[in-house]
Picture 1 (cartoon, rainbow over the protein chains, first blue to last red):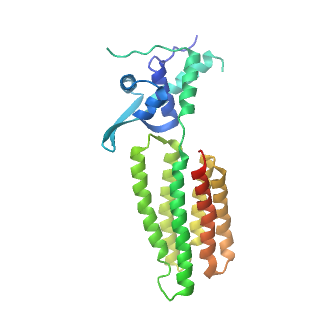
Picture 2 (cartoon, each protein chain N blue to C red):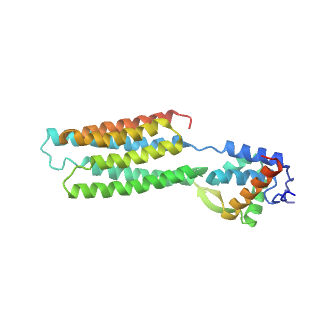
Picture 3 (tube, chains in turn green, brown):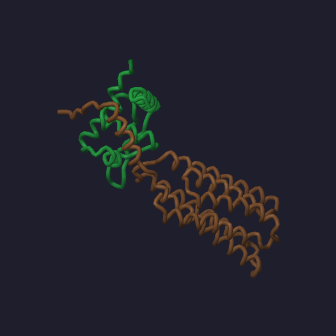
Length: 94
Length: 192
């Protein structure tokens, strides 16, 4: 009856990353780590999954002398988030 | 082994989304730097223009404005580029405001060029442009003092037409103090 929830988004870290990127145009790795409250290794892995699904773009830059990873949402990721939110709203009768 | 994540329920999803969005905040206070920079530069240029024109025989009494504009332009670009590369996030509002002010900045140059070419003071039109930028900035940041500052600039742009030509630059300076500097300091002191 209800749409299956998108398996790419239906995990806490990946969903939190995409929710953050809905609000801001770009966010760096440290900010996403703060929001998701996860480890560096896990966040890297989840970002890779989102990138493989073509939901986010990852840009590698430098912050001072240190490497910096900047993420932004793709149109496909935005669309997937909208569908996901519609699905949970329907399910929860919101 | 790669870390795997568990799937979450519909209700948990909603909480994750709400939590992530609520903890991602815009940092508008950073923008106060630009209002203070331009506010002080233009106010100082207005006063210097008035003094040079009224109390000296200097022919290039208008020179404080190009100096202020060049200084402000360089500092703004350098600071913006530096800040953008280290900021943890760039919000859509910050992105929009940077483009808005960039376009207004180009229009400032055009307006000044057109008016000076026609031997007219550009203050009415520069205040209208400043008013548009400040008004829109206040509205999108939901920061009322800045919205009021924009309105002050727009009203001053009309009032200035009725002020004797020699004193227009002083009203211009006063409008910048109330339209840029005061809201700029209030923004700096706010928790936005």
